[in-house]
Image 1 (cartoon, rainbow, N blue to C red):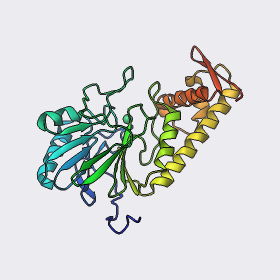
Image 2 (cartoon, rainbow, N blue to C red):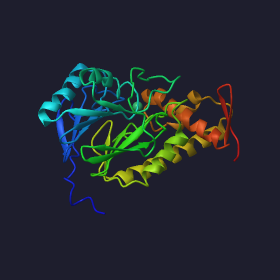
Image 3 (cartoon, helix red, strand yellow):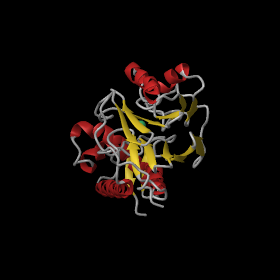
Image 4 (tube, protein in one colour):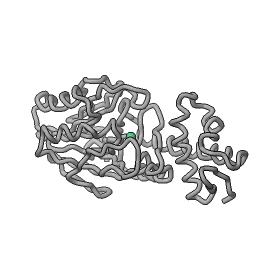
Length: 294
Ligand SMILES: [Zn+2]
């Protein structure tokens, strides 16, 4: 089936904080004013519907952004009845609590924050924790929840099926690779979640940060390849440096990445090491890692 006959050309421009931008029929983007090294131009909130609006990733607890989301009801002439959440990092879900008090009838959909993990929003209280592949009928159309653990364990992408438009949260970003944060973030899960997306009919992706991705399956394949290449670098570095810690391995494995990003790269490197261990290609003793032949 071709979606192209019914799909409006995608708006591929960079998000502008505070500006409501139409992307497709009944699909809008509102970028929060929280730009940073980790959030790019800011966190993207997507809005979908005609007679009833669904929000995807309400964003950070930022008064201007919460007010802009509420004001969109007036601009678009419909009430917000659903709030979908990709995950519970502090730039993606803390606005939910404020929206829920302003809109008590709105249904909140997402998975609760994993325990024992940093950077998590513990104020996020969903009404529904969706099963993998669960469909929600919304305003006469359908939204499918696709579990995509990896970046963090409770991550979900949501597919607006009529457009093949996937809101990716932090599973994929436009222009940079995402950080995998152990212990709940898992490189093995991350790559499996990417492979899972290649089986879905996706025309475009709305990432949590950055412009719309117009070539989704190309980006999925590139990302899998890129991660496996990094894994090979980790394995090589480990072979030459038995007993090294993740911090000691970073300069070798991430020689292509600016040094001010190395503390963040260390998290993903640790995630690669855990995957190697799960694949029986590395062992760890008190933070020291050693390669073992598979
Ligand atoms: Zn995140």
